Length: 103
Image (cartoon, rainbow, N blue to C red; front, top):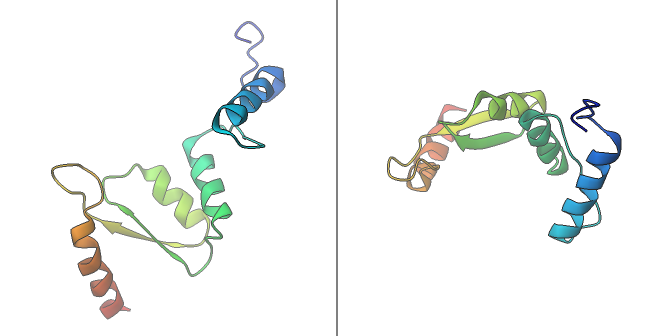
């Protein structure tokens, strides 16, 4: 694969997709070219689109926001918990109330 520079599609990728699908116990798995593509496919599978709002953590990478806006949805950022660096669930309800008052 390295000698042929066959990193996209091809029999090796197909074999990896099948092996991964078997490993996680599903019928299909699809390899994608970037994290942005993976996020866009996940949002599409969830039916996210125009007029939706997606809440994510403020310390995310730009690809997260890019994928959300590409789907036509609005990004809503919530600060991270300073102990875990994950979304601060305690702050989530306050932020949602604030957004509703602004709208």
